[in-house]
Length: 293
Image 1 (cartoon, rainbow, N blue to C red):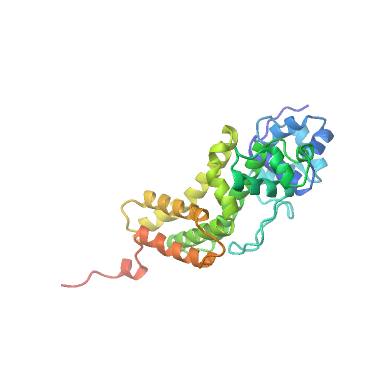
Image 2 (cartoon, rainbow, N blue to C red):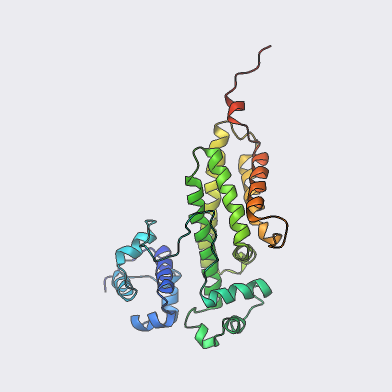
């Protein structure tokens, strides 16, 4: 076997995403590969090395190519149909989760990660415990899958929102609007994503933290650029941006469908709050000549 190591994080997560998209259980794919479910789980979470030969076998079993898996790992566009994409970053169709993850999300919201047993999740998913293990190797795998799904969608929509902006202030506004919309429409995922970070095992926490840092830096860059242009005048731009992002992340703790505000109204208000915090100056104020004596 050729023992060339591949990316241990992104390649594994791509294998998992393709397996779930194809409707193949962890145990079924492991049996086809002649490895234990635990070994395959370790491959998907980056704890076990993946060789070129094994990658080729996985690609064949999942009806794709090694190149397609590696393209996604390196940040290139994934093959069409491999993962669901939002039609627009402001559009929020119902969240599509497989039955096990849907049950896990419901139970984590009800009782918390440590207060939920695998048996609770299996019961909510109308599965036996052994049947549940055909899909996910552990409760930790379910939590990791939920948080990875949340951050993947958040980052994808962030990039789409940012790309609509023509200057740093507009890009900043759009990013704040997106963050507020996402944490309103996806508040169940957002709540679990914030409250259960502490429940992730170290290797999983490292992965999700890296994605959260990438999200924060996306907003940081636009705020810093706007400050450089004289549009944002707060003396503490970095701290102000972190306060704004934290404000958006907290939306799931209070927002309710039956309340008086729509997600769009919440987002509009939060954009106003954010610009006030950054002490935004209009273009005319920045470019106008000083008043005469």
